[in-house]
Image (cartoon, rainbow, N blue to C red; front, side, top):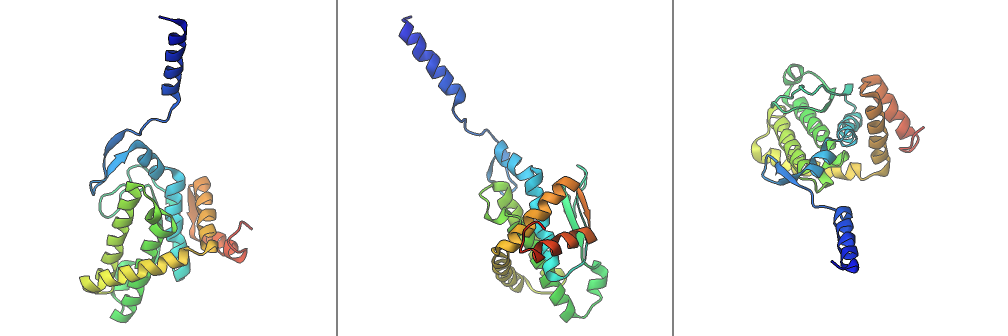
Amino acid sequence: MRKNERERLARRAEYLKSRPRPHKFIGETKDGRPLTQAHADEFECDQNIARHEAGHAVGRWIMGHKIDYMQFNAENDKGNHGDILAASTVGGERLPDIMALPIGERTVIGLQEAFVTLAGVVGGGDASSDNPLCKWETQNHLRQAHGKLYHIAGMDDDECRAQVARLLGVVAACFRHPVLQNMVTILAITLVKARRLEGNAIVKILNDAYAHGGSTP
């Protein structure tokens, strides 16, 4: 083999090692979207999880709802549908207490709870992401918002769909405001570091951030 041919092959081998490689597909999401390891890594990273929960918390703050705590969960913690919950934001009134209220008050609370549900995927960024796992998460939260309007407010399916579509626009308009975007970021960064935040600490972080125009005090 000629020297220049060996050099050419060596350069080609070095190029092949250094060039970006296509991500390996590892399966599908529950709605059949092809999934890569890069998608999973992006979706499951602490920062993305914390932003999602911060979106919920800011939604509760906007509604004036009680916030009990936010935390990263143990690996085996599950939600109502058996899904593993990497993190959770807990607050609001107990469902039995809500269901004992007159239908008018239940309707208001149902709309507020649907807003908070949508705030997680809109404020946290899932709704605007091309990641198929984020798209699935968004669809899941749309269904959850629908369910809250159906069960709490007693709306029929058509009205639930119409209200979810309307609320989605309202939530998106709220979280386009740079102050709210920064509040989500500040709270998410704090949660990643602390792993758990109590309600009074969350409210203080959000109040301070809002008072400073969404910047860190």
